[in-house]
Amino acid sequence: MILIKLGGSIITDKTQYRTFNRGAVRRLCKEIKDSGIDAVIVHGGGSFGHVLAKEHSLQNGYTEPSQIPAAAKVQYDMRELNLMVISELLDAGMPAVSVPPGSCFMMDDGKLILDDPEVLLSASRLGLTPVVFGDVVFDRRKGFGICSGDQIMEVLCRIYDPEKAVFVSDVDGLFDKDPKKNPGSKLLPEVTWDLLKTVSSDISVDDVTGGVGAKMESMLRMTSSKRDCVLVNGSVEGRLYSLLKGDKVISTTAKGGSK
Amino acid sequence: MILIKLGGSIITDKTQYRTFNRGAVRRLCKEIKDSGIDAVIVHGGGSFGHVLAKEHSLQNGYTEPSQIPAAAKVQYDMRELNLMVISELLDAGMPAVSVPPGSCFMMDDGKLILDDPEVLLSASRLGLTPVVFGDVVFDRRKGFGICSGDQIMEVLCRIYDPEKAVFVSDVDGLFDKDPKKNPGSKLLPEVTWDLLKTVSSDISVDDVTGGVGAKMESMLRMTSSKRDCVLVNGSVEGRLYSLLKGDKVISTTAKGGSK
Image (cartoon, rainbow over all chains, first blue to last red; front, top):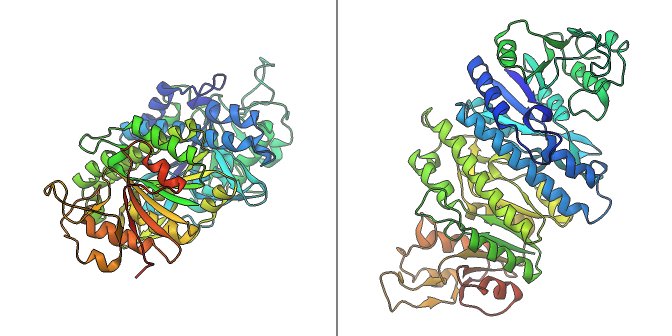
């Protein structure tokens, strides 16, 4: 089984509130289906989640009553986005079912608690494809908070122990310098904990507020002696398909087991 | 707090696959909001759930592989319907959040297991309005099954202990004879376990496959010495509002505590 995250930057237009990239999602769903792999899918929020969540500081937890309708609206927007993704998966011939974290799980001071994976495992056992996503999630201490797609990936790695975890973004991988500022920057095909220390920390990748350092650390935490974690560009046609088929493609692979 | 079920016959056109009664739902959401009560809402599936579920015998559990895409499609259709209901609640000014049983809970041989109501209670505590609905739910013994809105109402009565449970349907209440066949049939303003024995069992109400007997038994099971359970016609403008405000309206009230 391969755990795949479709990043918010690839499935939405992050610059425009609630804009879905249907064409890209349709193609990526077909690439996943055509590869023939068993998948569990996670997706980000992009412009369906981040805009309003940021406006109302939902990531900081409950501070004032005006956040309540905003929390409901962000959950609503995320479920709309999720249904659009599910619809494309169904059309591609994958029997996808939604598992929305905000409805199913709790957080404790920002940490996602997923004590009971029975629904997820029941779905997979029947040959259904679970689809999870970044969401507003209730929090025992803070009232609520934002659970990112990356947090979900880490938890699902523990539950499913997948052979590979794949992050589909709109960049070719991790570079030694920010490629937007440095034309001569080089793609790093492989990253380890040791190598990460040498990489400039101000590079922005995908939708990561914590910068590329947090992103790669999160990816490295998902690796094991048997499992790599790959960052691949989903905006290039066929690249995800080739990766899933086991071909060597332009990408960055986090390796080396967890710290 | 009042637990309200919006029946499938009132929120959809049951004769046409996937037809939403937006006007009726919009009005009912406004009536709930205007009444000023705290609500937890359940809705049925109507033509979004029943048509395809019946076609593939999903209520009998897993018997053949062709049911798998059908189970995914029914879950998808139900989530579309749910988002339409949520959207109307948000527009009416109620911060509604979705809790889909098929994503969050399990069944065991047709019985809904809801061991952990933490998400539901967290939502209510913050002033959000949980919305639950009839769904395809994974089943420990049968693979999956159908969890009806009425089953959910019973479980939510145990969790929330509401002051009243209200079933909004498209009939005025329970009659002593089937009103469609007997013009002289009389509405029963009150039903108890004893009275139920005297009522003709072939009367059809709302979307209940088990007939009116099962419906009223389910309603009676939800009563307690402190809680009535009311069947009211939501297609008559203002009737739900009046009921929620505490006025006497045309309806059938199940009374008398559980058996």
